[in-house]
Length: 147
Ligand SMILES: [Zn+2]
Image (cartoon, rainbow, N blue to C red; front, side, top):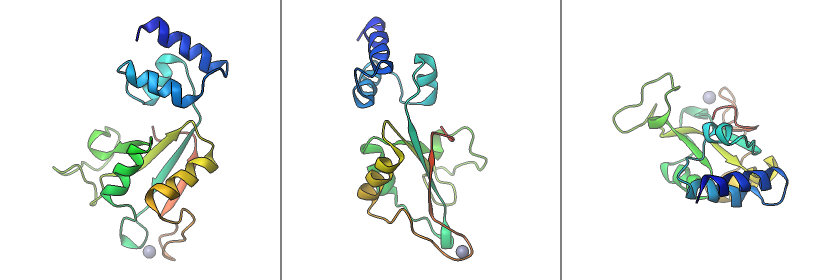
């Protein structure tokens, strides 16, 4: 895909002529990572919902498989091993306190649809209260605060 083709697609997306899934696939085909940096470079601002995992009750509620399944479903997982902003150095397996990641962002869906998709992919209750002292294990933020 040429730069010009991608630029035209960005214009089409901004004009509402193609949806985010199509543009995201074209960005990926052009070899660009699906990250905030890329969106800034291309001047696109896709809607995003960021999931934040809390180890309520002293355990992580998402398994490694859950994170991988989210990634496969189109979520941009912020793996600890790739996260230069994480304040605790990941161990040699890429884990911090045993977890591979804490954040994932889904672009191109409303917050409601993103939460519905998350619920289907990981088969957990997004509204779970967790334990009394630690609070909710799952939080969702509109826009990608952590990307
Ligand atoms: Zn607790």
